[in-house]
Length: 141
Length: 141
DNA sequence: AAGATACTTGACTATTTTAGTCAGGTTTAT
DNA sequence: ATAAACCTGACTAAAATAGTCAAGTATCTT
Ligand code: FES
Ligand code: FES
Image (cartoon, rainbow over all chains, first blue to last red):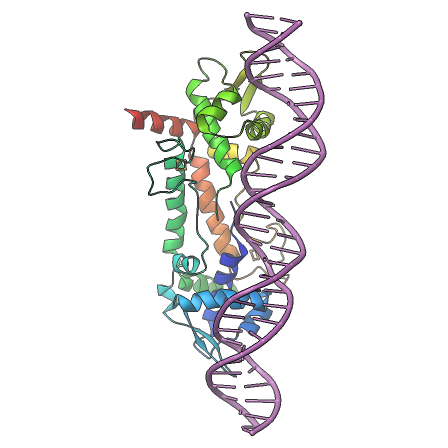
């Protein structure tokens, strides 16, 4: 069970963005250099973030991206949702009555994995981008 | 972020095993049929579980596997450990002082992912095989 | 108006990981 | 003897991931 780069980079890039976007738009090039993430890959990620209205783009020279909401209103859930980083623990389709083994009842572990999924998602629902930025400022002092 | 089959099957198979192993050894063939898991794959998994002393094997006709500890002393952590299903959220090497971006300090999100890793592992540390068996018995009533 | 910067889009590909399969064993109860 | 079941290691197909690449378009600065 591991976190993929897409999710990791999305949060990392937004954490970087959130520190400066009140001054001026932040270009992906800068984020790429500061965070060591491929520019082309960042573009894919920000395209999704923009479509889900987490960031706003400003084209042209001196352009870049800015947050589209307050940092405290952007939860990790929203970010992960936007870039399709999903938590998947059960194997079956949740809506279906059928189990993952093809049988007509849910398997022995279905409830367990469902609990796990909720457990993980709770973490993402609680944490906001603001929490992350604050923590980094404190560390720096 | 998703759970892999290896971890899922390991727990599923042990949950099945735990229900009957007090009567007689449970053969992988039976588990394979009941849970719909490939026999060959189960053998790989149980080889690891045996090496980590979670199950004990009994060879020959009428053989099979039995738990090597009490169900309440087998935590999900132990199972996942045995089959190398690890939770990996940070990208860097934890021991190292270096960050995942190659720089000399940890990245902006390192602490966040570390928290997440602990959050998930706590779930695995608390849940035992006994919990799982009990839950299934209750559901059945 | 020109040039540079930076966003936009979609297709393509290499690498890695996962999820098995396969072929050949060995042990032991009956 | 023979069948049931464990044991081992190597091999492979499929899927997912993590990018790259190419060809744009918009806007600011000079
Ligand atoms: S995970 Fe849902 S039935 Fe097995
Ligand atoms: S995850 Fe550890 S430094 Fe980025």
